Image 1 (cartoon, rainbow, N blue to C red):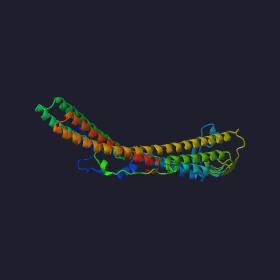
Image 2: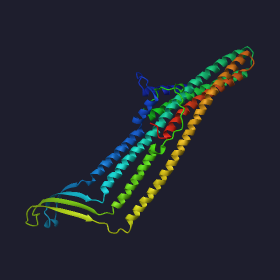
Image 3: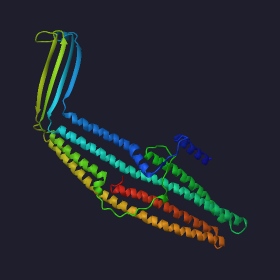
Image 4: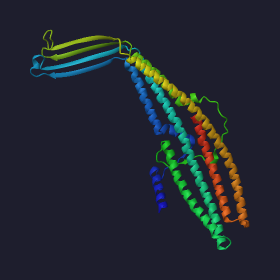
Length: 425
């Protein structure tokens, strides 16, 4: 009943995601990478953040333009105010304010927002690099699970053949039943492992689908298998990972932004010069106090110059605070460089370990196949029992499992190494 419900759930999910007449797509790794870079939700969020900072940068460029404000109001005055003002009054005004000199704050504001835009672009690059590693890991996980399903089915076929031979031997009174029972226990475990692997394949596909922007889709194939790719023999690269890694580039931009902020704080203590022009017109009974007319219109021009004289050292303290923040950022930058160097070394060691695992697993496969062949021959000759054959089959399965794991681990380790040296693209 449990198996039936599980199969029904999978069929419903597949039917929901893809119509019956839909052609099942096959995704190659590069295709998945490109889909992730264009359709992943984290990338879209990062792009909107870039657009937001670009708008802020463009808006800051307009701060040197005049501000123009207009207002209109109507007043009805009751007693006793109507003895001083017209009982009905309408008034409109226009004011223009133009900054002339702001101590460089406008220019520095544009530079700060430009730097913020560069930082958001760098943060998107970090997201892309992390995403590409996630794509590689999710893609090769599907390869891994698929291969293990095939392996588990082959192993089951071996067990079924051994079960058949042992059953005949038991029926003929040539062996004990406990060997047959051992095989049947392993068969039950093999069925369970196949079920787990099939469930794992569904989850692995859902994981990749989410990363590449195809949420909830599982009815697709992938192009690669464990035996379709070759292992690259790499030499350690003398790279400038510190310069290539987007994390360091972002921290450098942050440092530059902090210096701009320091200049902005200093600019606040410089003289300010601005010009304001205001014109107004009012209509009301005898509103013009000069001649008693019902119309009053005039204008006002104002040139404002202000110079900070003494602020009890508050501005100097702000500058000192900002300089201390810059020092903190410098140490953060240095530590990040050290950690990146450690990441490169660790990723290189891990990559070489996977190459060693592949070599050893290839040797183990050859040895396990020969061991299984000899076990089958000796069993047919009657010199060993079914238990010995069963153990040889388990060793064979473990050897192939280790081989699958090693090759997939190599691919993921290679992606991590390229990410560490700043060359994953």
